[in-house]
Amino acid sequence: GESVGLHLPTLSVQEGDNSIINCAYSNSASDYFIWYKQESGKGPQFIIDIRSNMDKRQGQRVTVLLNKTVKHLSLQIAATQPGDSAVYFCAETGGAQKLVFGQGTRLTINP
Amino acid sequence: NAGVTQTPKFQVLKTGQSMTLQCAQDMNHNSMYWYRQDPGMGLRLIYYSASEGTTDKGEVPNGYNVSRLNKREFSLRLESAAPSQTSVYFCASSERETYEQYFGPGTRLTVT
Image 1 (cartoon, one colour):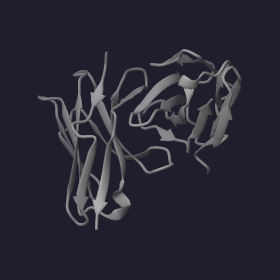
Image 2 (cartoon, rainbow over the protein chains, first blue to last red; image 1 turned 45 degrees about the vertical axis):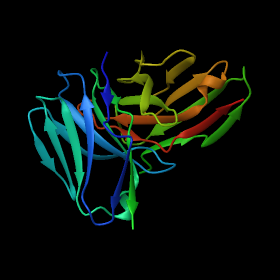
Image 3 (tube, rainbow over the protein chains, first blue to last red; image 1 turned 30 degrees about the vertical axis):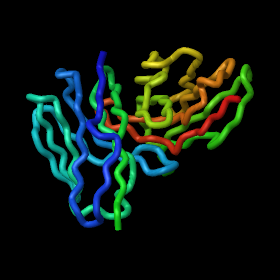
């Protein structure tokens, strides 16, 4: 079956440093990937997405990289701030408008 | 524009009791979803509704039923709650043409 997983369950970075959150996916037919941010006690919030015909996409302070050869997705957050503390999920398309979510990585920011 | 709303925010049930979780969206989205999230895990799809009048099972449908009441509302029912259904439940919606899903704030359910 389809599965999406993350390399690391937790990531701790210094405020101001760049953060890199990784994700491995298994379905080579997936054509769309999304990163979500979930703050404590809240629902997931869309950050950025990328289609399979791209290998990089940039947003405000965030960049998503897609390597289809090794089925790897990463989220880079520049100049990490305290407000970036959250759990980050990657998701891939699961057919028929469905998404398959990974387990999540908890990002903590050290002052 | 409230986005996706869910009621209640918290609920405690005894084993065997029933309840319905309500979800509504005001974005005129065609597709709606119910997920559960257990500690340390990602979201698992329970049921979804690709459009008004249709519902389909997701990854973990056992013990649940859904109703797509109209385009705005999608409810999730637990007929006989079990401790294994203790979880946080999220409702989401999306446009038919896109995969981006918008999530509600969640319902934290405890079954004792």
